[in-house]
Image 1 (cartoon, rainbow, N blue to C red):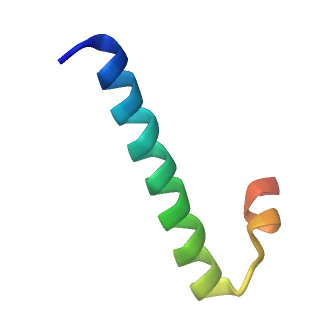
Image 2 (spheres, rainbow, N blue to C red):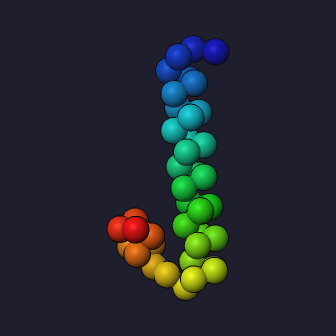
Length: 39
């Protein structure tokens, strides 16, 4: 696997993970994504 490919995979995984965290946090607290981003 090339380095560029690995970087893309890491970025995509990180983005999906962040999205998941935001969704979970919203379900638990009812906070908006802006609240989470500023926390």
